[in-house]
Image (tube, rainbow, N blue to C red; front, side):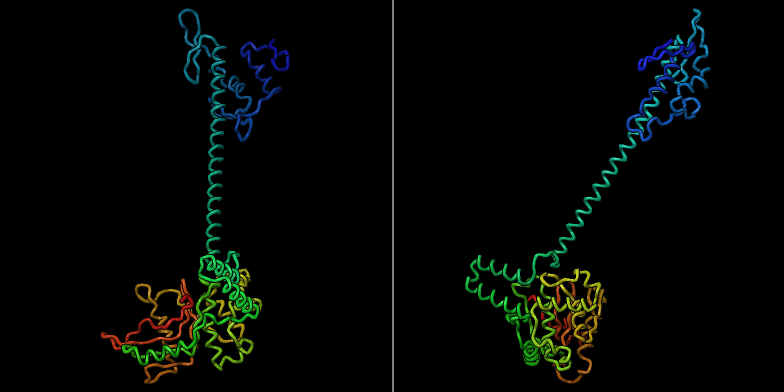
Length: 409
């Protein structure tokens, strides 16, 4: 009889396999968990002789199905003793029980190695999963930083608008000794009054630009053959409140100053007789969005411009003018049409715009055409005219066709 060390139960002794009943009892009455790290505890292991999965009965399977290999007599040593060879490593034993224990060690090593392989695989998968998670986290972090950078660049970072920047820049001027405190308070009061009425204070306006250009080309510039100028327009440059982001609004003020002088647009502008301030222009664009103009563009700004430093362009001005019942058109020259990134088709279109219905022998022609709101990367100039000059190799040469009124200057 054999006693179980765990529960004390007496088990019958098997002469051929003395340890087999005890092992069977331990595996059934006191089972152990599968190998650490195994995804399936107690997973079946293959028989090293036939490859069949025998599970927890592997040892019994080996003795019952392949016992002839383990218990077969070995070679005679000449002294009447039998030698028994291990079928797994060819080790020779002089005792059948020693051979049994030796084979059991092989089976236990095989089970451990399979479990270790599973643990290595799971560890590798876990490490790869953590690496992928870290990379996704870093990518999301970079995207958030880039998005915030773009928001700051285009004035969508909720850092305040025209009023906040105007006051901040004036305070900086006072701190640096470039502005007296009394001037600070006077300009602050003027700015608050301008914002309250929604009318530009006119402190950045320059009138008589077209007249000055007409006089210059008639009397001073001798190498120009033909000049076409737009209708009268006032120039508006940036101020302390919109420096760095307000060119789109300033150029609309230039365009509007020309339209207000043109009787053709009197009915459309009957409610707009003075040049609006930048915050007022922002509110006018928001009104156009609420009427349903350019919903896709409105979503880009989250339907809000007022109180921000958001950049605007031709699409926003188109929406505003269209909401005022003006007939507008956007012409897109989205890629160069000439060598070295030049745009000859753009210049041809502008030449046609100003010269149509304005042919004649005069060197300088002041047309009734409004200026063109021109948008390109990094700037929003207002196009007020063009010139054609003589060239020694050609009859005429179209050059830098515009006189630009850039709000940044």
